[in-house]
Amino acid sequence: MEVTARAPGKIILSGEHAVVHGSTAVAASINLYTQVSLRFSNESNDGLLKFHLKNMGFEFSWPIERIKEVLPESGSPRSSTPRSCPPESIIAITNLVEEQNIPEAKIGLAAGITAFIWLYTSIHGCKPATVVVTSTLPLGSGLGSSASFCVSMSASLLASSDAVNLDLGHQGWFSFGESELELVNKWAFEGEKIIHGKPSGIDNTVSTFGNIILFKSGKLTLMKSSMPLKMLITNTKVGRNTKALVAGVSERALRHPDAMAHVFTAVDSISKEFSSIIQSPASDDLSLVEKEGKLEELIEMNQGLLQCMGVSHASIESVLRTTLKYRLASKLTGAGGGGCVLTLLPALLAKTVVDKVIAELESSGFQCLIAEIGGKGVEICFDGSS
Ligand SMILES: Nc1ncnc2c1ncn2[C@@H]1O[C@H](COP(=O)(O)OP(=O)(O)O)[C@@H](O)[C@H]1O
Ligand SMILES: C[C@@](O)(CCOP(=O)(O)O)CC(=O)O
Ligand SMILES: [Mg+2]
Image (cartoon, rainbow, N blue to C red; front, side, top):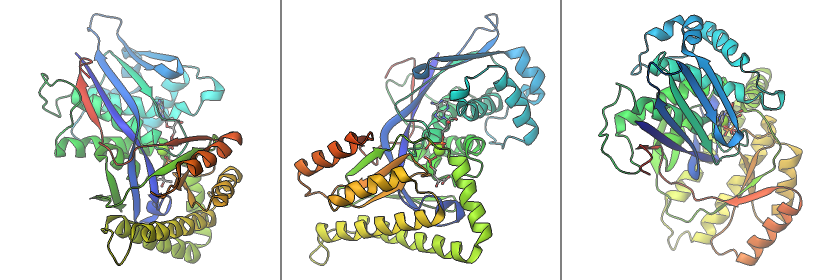
């Protein structure tokens, strides 16, 4: 039997970084996905754990005996009890990853492969299998590829474990029940910890549950937007690493605790106001245009505070200057330092203007897309019946 899971990426509309320090943030799923397929091999087969990153053209494999030798605890997996990877296991898994001689230019993948080995061995122990990953998300661009990878991985592993009871006769994509989603989310968070160091949990949560969410200190509230939220996503294509950026903000907070506490509080207020505006119905008191005007101001304020945290970048500033020429408000999304920028496209904005902004941004070498937001979270299907 083959089981496949797919989990969406995300945009953070308000509150990245500050959310790691306890502030409120607002995020939405987007219609770009990571997909993971898992098929167990016959015991008598080659005795390998195979891991294919299909769109990158990488095929890695480890003899199961080698994994047992390096990770003796993997003999007793506990799929229903999410566990953090202890430092000694990180060292052991790092050895397994290094044996694969990943090219230097792709060394960022090592963190994802480490998370895979931890999740696989913790949930399934030492069974031979083939795991194939495909993705339509750009990696390391702020659209939550790491979380969508960990969520789709955890979902495919759990769907084929004793921890969840599923109807194998299901046709096409379907969702887990609430308690299974909680378990997927917890395991995915453990994977994110390996990739990010100190994640807030917002990315894996929105990838698991989909929708638009309000998130604070590990707790989510599902939201319904009462207004169209059309967002232009511009990828600066400047690579960066979330772990380093998150650590940089924490270091700044240690150096300037008072000032940074105020920055995080201001972001908390911005996120709360953002969520109340998008949820409140348009009325005579506040028309759609007025609501969009308020959101634009909050977006600009949020970007100013992100700059204050030290996570903006020349490429981000260049996108902001271009969109400002068209009176459009933008902010970075995700960890910053490059990666993607969000621009609110007001509902009545003429298509000709949208086309012009996109053409100008793309002529500078950036890549634009308008994603659908707030769709479903993680889904699974059996035997390619999608
Ligand atoms: N499809 C994938 N296959 C393997 N590793 C992945 C995949 N998607 C994400 N990752 C891991 O996540 C890292 C990127 O995560 P991060 O720096 O948090 O950026 P983002 O989450 O914004 O894309 C990659 O360098 C890699 O380690
Ligand atoms: C910066 C942060 O708020 C979001 C990181 O998102 P991404 O990995 O850049 O997609 C970190 C976090 O919340 O865990
Ligand atoms: Mg990430």
